[in-house]
Length: 325
Image (cartoon, rainbow, N blue to C red):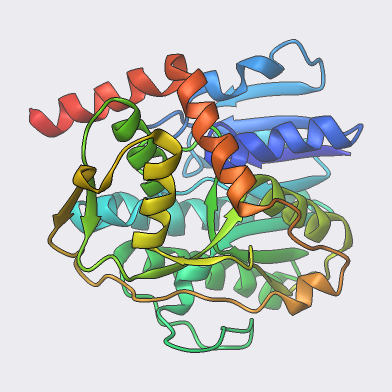
């Protein structure tokens, strides 16, 4: 099979490309604009694989998407603006990439009659839940520009299924962690700060709850949906390990050899959802289950950032320079 992977130089996308090339005989075309979240270096260990083709391009570019998708049997659509804090400061880019870009990808997939498509989304589209877990049938109640545009992109993809019979499926994962994650995100930001002897900014009271899923588990789930999922269906993906942000911070402090004095409480994020949780029974019925132990995988993640400064230091320095300008 020949796959088009949009956003394949981003965090989850690059890990998914690595998963496919390591577990199948498929060929992969990566299509990525290489904006702040996409980095060609995230794929450089795969450069010698003849099954990988990289094309730089924007998902809002109809001609570019068409050229990249021609000859592909399936599409896995990761390309998205994905950081809540950035969406609060500049929501326009999120509407353009997440909604307009998804419309372009779906329309091209329809015209080229691809066999199947997976649209990769997030549990944040459901909003906050105090008890229990959201199922795929629950209503969407996004509370940030980021999650609202992801909810919109989900509905665009599903509308292409209803209107044009596009064989699209949607995945909604809980928070991911692992290698090659942009250092603006919680785990890599806290880890890299602590490795450099800097404090970590903890929002509010630190009691916001997130379920953590290692990126390899998410990639395995996405790939299973691609190969065994039913068109038109939505699949929640959960790691099954809920932690408050304070509990997670304490684990990172211990792994980095730092004490409580490295925590810097900061004002809470605008519209900060208290708790996310999704029910993953539907994808579990396909034969998936999370395999990564959180404590072991978190330690391995910290070790990866400790050993791969070449990857994250230039990215972080660029972000800090932009913030200070």
